[in-house]
Amino acid sequence: MSNLGWLFERIWDVRAILDILVVTFIIYWLLWVAQGTRALTLIRGIVTLFAFLFLLGWLLQLDSLNWILRNVWPALLIAIPVIFQPELRRAFEQLGHTGSWLKNPFPNQEETANDHAVDEIVRAASQLSRLRYGALVVIERETGLQDYVGKGVSLDAEISRQLLINIFFPNTPLHDAAVIIQGDRILAASVVLPLTDNISASSQLGTRHRAAIGVTEESDALAVVVSEETGQMSVAHSGRLIRNLDQDRLRRVLRTLLKIQTPESPESSTSGRFTFASIFNSNGSSTRGQRDAATSRKRTTTRSS
Image (cartoon, rainbow, N blue to C red; front, side):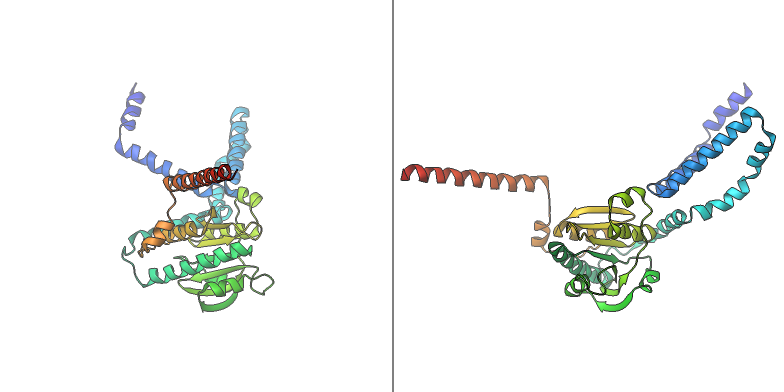
């Protein structure tokens, strides 16, 4: 009875509840970071193996096996950072990005440069999409990408849509890799990026899209991708891919992710807004126009006959 009373006392203890919530949050966060990567498969394999060995040692009373399992934990704690190094690095980088919450809400010179860069990138991507030229443009944010810049061809040129289109023109020396942009400057071209470890993405996407997801998994960068096969424009961020974008949606997505608060002109904001009402009205008006035109043609034919 005393044990039951102790249990009820611990259940209603605020510190015990807080302790359980903190541990639950940490486990959930680590599993969320590992979701979609090879780490999740490794975790399943490790848990399955140790559960089977513990059950086998407990049922059959295997002293040697139980001794090994009791003493393997220190070695396992050392092996975990080695096995899950990419996932832990990604998790700590995401924690380090919390400083972006404290940024100045008013537009500054950096936001103006980013706004100009977004406009040039969107126009270049739209034209490359029409021409079916593949492209991969990486936009640097807080995490530096100098490790990748050093492996490419240094440019340090002012960004322009003409230069981007010329870089990704087929059969040119710089077209078959990525371009890295910092602010309104093109730092380097022909940059080789790491491919994602996401199993589902690896089986469905090409090398260009996998590289875009891979660089956003290891940093807070954004990557704009133009498919060479379909001309489809996509944006990768935080290891995720937003696909099937047109020019207006691409501009809005980039401005939102870069937190650009520079006011847009009423014409561009109105033309770039997609709602169910606008789509319905546009479809309805076009349908009514076709119906009226067909009726007028029928009346003209009747009168002539």
